[in-house]
Image (cartoon, protein in one colour):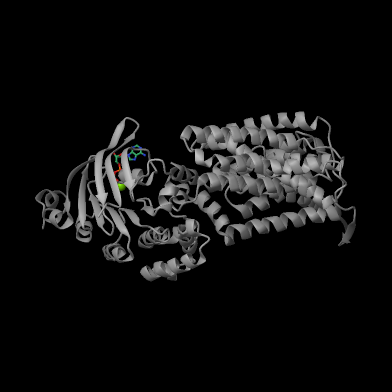
Length: 350
Length: 239
Ligand SMILES: Nc1ncnc2c1ncn2[C@@H]1O[C@H](COP(=O)(O)OP(=O)(O)O)[C@@H](O)[C@H]1O
Ligand SMILES: [Mg+2]
């Protein structure tokens, strides 16, 4: 291999890795705040691309029904909970939060179906449809299990993934879609051709990682999430509701997942079930960061992208195998580094 | 004057084991009340139950209302505040951020937050010097000061302190008790759990003795200091 090819492969890998960065950061965020390993994360990215594709084809995206179904389930559960606790004064608020609010984006999507909106608005509609998904899943599947072990939460997360991709098959159908490119422009950098799309993917990863960092370091809301991740009892004792922190984490994650979907939509053909493998690769990045460190996670996700790119050059049939095999040395290395760390974590939870 | 906190026949179970049995205590506004007792008596459990961290039977009235249906966060919003034995600091965050989050419920009130920082830094100048330091790297005494400071940021009316002197050097213990005594002037009532019985009784107005989950003795702190059973068991036999 000459350096030119190596450079191209690296560049390609960084571009793909940029998407994994966004999803991996979201995975760490959700895990640290709620202890849930959010397996359906990749699904959300795929739905986002499929939603945009449907909008561009002038169809009503299946996401509309997905969101409505999830909102209805969440509303029923919340109502039953409130009635059982005799907390009737909070019913209107629940109706607003779980009934009305999540159904606004579907209403907008429905009203604008078939309109030739500018691309930026199409993306906004798609993203707003994606936003409620993860918080609603949280309400339906994870919140009733507060206090369950990480393993139980993981099992439920896997179940949610299968349920969600089942619904996705129903709503999106089995065929694959690609969204229109945001721009077909390209430019030369040191003799390499870089498309505008690639630059956008990398720039988005940098910008949104930066925003996430600023959010954690400089806003009280971000700090409340950090605090919940750091010490749940401590967070409760200063008045931070774990439920609220969880919702916030899932909402941010939904945004990151949705954004990644919009970015890969034009470069990859996506099917209703394409998300899983994307989420899994991002998860490898999150594992490199030990599900705690955001910077290491970002680097890890980039590495996964580059590894995948080189692997597919050598043997495209084996690329997934190579990427996931990399998990084994990573896990060995991590358990080596943090041999006693896990026990401490358990204590804090207990 | 009616009591700020009124606990009646409170019991707590861990599974089949009863850790607290039929405990009734009360704290009047402006008072410092202490609960002393040996390790494992159920002191921590009692405070956790009052705060709503563990389930309990019996009645907890705070400021005239039954708080049974209120969660931890709602009790805090009413000024009921706990500094737990395990401190529960945000270990990987700075001193400043720990304090700031103490005022989480008042996050939209910039004036309150600024004034509270000033008040806490006034009480604990050490925290002001170390405001950018990460909580985990503080000494034991500083961690306790941070835990106290964080609680004071939450606008407490009744501050429950679980063994604030635990594991601290004598000089720092004195400092902590001086600050607890000064809380009265800030209008904060205190429910103080301590194993350091002498210092606690010297600081408090009223005292309870908790043994194996049940109250065995109660009275004015100055009386308990001279009570034979208390001196024999908790004050090392000297008066
Ligand atoms: N989480 C728990 N689960 C089961 N038993 C507990 C738990 N916490 C405390 N206990 C038991 O309850 C009793 C009272 O403990 P605790 O309230 O910590 O006492 P103290 O604070 O007075 O030392 C002890 O026997 C202790 O072993
Ligand atoms: Mg204790």
